[in-house]
Image (cartoon, rainbow, N blue to C red; front, top):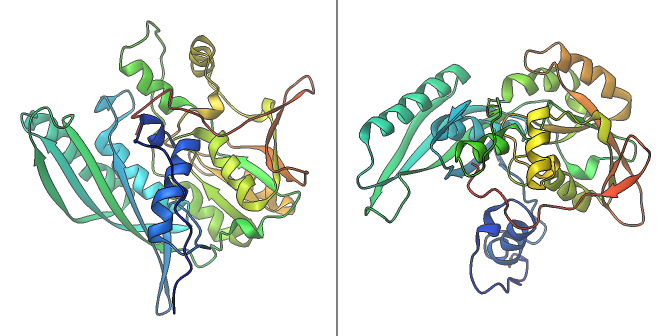
Length: 345
């Protein structure tokens, strides 16, 4: 049987930084060049793949981390690598079980820095209850890398009550956001010292499974979809959702939490917090009748105290993301275009 595949339609002559932004250029690269060779035409492009092995449902994911600088307020590349992989599994409804880790090292790298990151990864994984079971190491010539890159693979066990599928989303379903947005992206920008701005802010990197597991335990059937809005931010994640469902996401601007330091930095730089990367927050679409109960449970779960219902799904002539201001005006929020903050994860 011949597998029906997408047709390769990528026309860009070279790869640019924007292709790694998580926004429009990234989607263009994946859908136009990568997916046609690897996936069936109707395959869902998600952060993790679900595999059935006998009676088990397993989730498998992979990720790479090239953040600069390696260490920053609230975290480091090693902590980011462990948490980010755990979160990709969690957003597929899977409890993380094991990780593989690959290091790409640049000749001349300070071994004390490497040791710090290895120790950080070990401690982060142990705290999350996840085993690091293997990996690989490669070294490139001095000047051919940037100190340290990390690639991971993660294996998880899908929760028995998790049945996430964007096609199950209905008009009227609610959108929940777990907490304030933009902390990670702005933290990385300030840590680079490229702008003269002082702000007391730290990355929000954290493992999300402890936060979402209780939701699946109690309200699994009501949870339709989850995503951690990393590169490209909330706007990109929700635009992808709108495209996949054919529905419009209507957001209430007043409900979206943004710390004053993040908002100030965004205003100064002409950025929208909805496009800024996060590493410790998630979006969920839940049934309208269960939304308040899900939110109440989140508020009682450590780390979920700042969760809010930020919008709902509507039918419209054209799917997309709309934001309603306090004054009643409405604006369109598109996916991230370009890459204003490269190498943030």
